[in-house]
Amino acid sequence: MLHKIATAVITNHVQSETAKAGPLGLLAGLVVGTVLRRSVPGAIIIGGVMVARQLFKLKRNVEAKRVADAKAAEDEAEAHPS
Image (tube, rainbow, N blue to C red; front, side):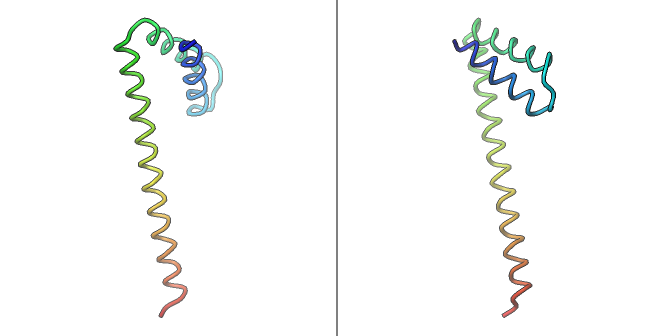
């Protein structure tokens, strides 16, 4: 069951990142699923990489929001001088 879930998740991820469906996503999903099934250390490494990637994306989104909020506040201050 974990193999099927991992295959689906990785296949969807490759499709969303490359905007291409097909052999690349399927192959990546199968490779990851095989590693997860056969190796506990492999599963730990892959899981750790996936968590680290999500944390990196979250940090990047928070930083982008902070910059956008600062720019909006600056624009508002310029529009309404005291």
